[in-house]
Length: 425
Image (cartoon, rainbow, N blue to C red; front, side, top):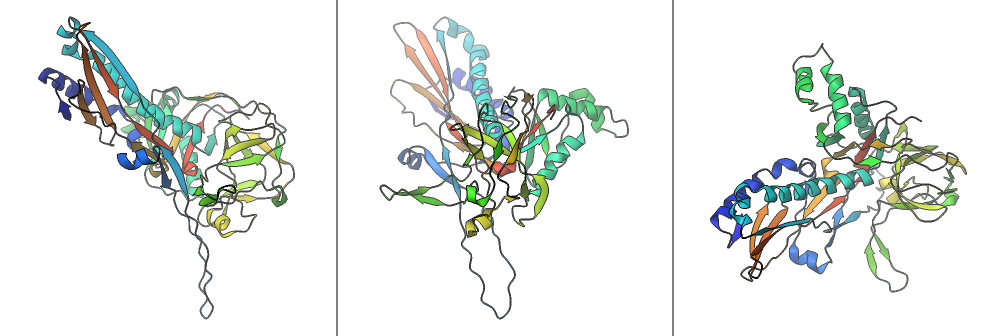
């Protein structure tokens, strides 16, 4: 804890306040952290490009024949320091006689900053995850979570560091099912007494107090897309792009694709869908999974175009980059039917592999000895909390402010998913 001019009583109070800060960072403690350099971020407008997982596709060596050299494309995504939560409160010279003794206002500010960190991570997960697992019933049993594991395994997502965040009602529904199992010992008792689920199907599960919800899809049931190669609704990954006007070269964000469909009427960002004949494949072996690939709508552009994630990398263009990052098998059709999966409004449940989401702590350089007193606290995952205090002698009022700065980026949308209950087709 770095300190400048706070008195002893204030230092002790804020140290006590921040003791509970770490315990509230449930979601943000289960993502990767990438430390940023303040000088570099200032010079790059607070944007840094983070690498995505490289997928390699090899083959067999044939003795006596030359090996085939294939191009390898390395992809990256932009990460921006754009989260700047702030809270403040004021105390008069009279209120200072008592208010600092219990620190209730400081605790409230701490809780707000902690809640913002968690909600920003969860918002990123809810809005950008592309694996969609719809369940037609209410949250119930092991099979619901195990289905999420199956989808990840089929696509070749590594089995380590998997986490699932369930909203309170669905988490308690899971706990209720577990508590009713008399054939098990120990765990059902804990589920009954504390609504605790714990590790299930290779996921560490956590209960959330947030209310993120997905709306019911309003798009029509007759939407189609042309998946023939001639329609060019397939995606070709590339690391960089050169502008035609000035010739400048810049990185490309390959998480998104603009596609053309029959109509986007009533389609909204966040909608989840599948396309007939577009099947998920194992990302390394490229074998078909037998399951339709799930997609999310990121943005509706026109009456017939929209941005989706992930892109449809079908290898219909037969380039090295497409072969390397192929994620779907396509049975071509001029009128492939689009089916929306979020048929009913529902609370979000999100799951991910830890490296799929990154938290990027930023820093403020607050000058000292310029009339404002400062105190800095750094969390275990690197987030700096700046506490400042100023005093107005004309009003005898002290102003306390709490600030943090960071960014959240999803580097691998196909390693992050949403589990939606009560989705009646």
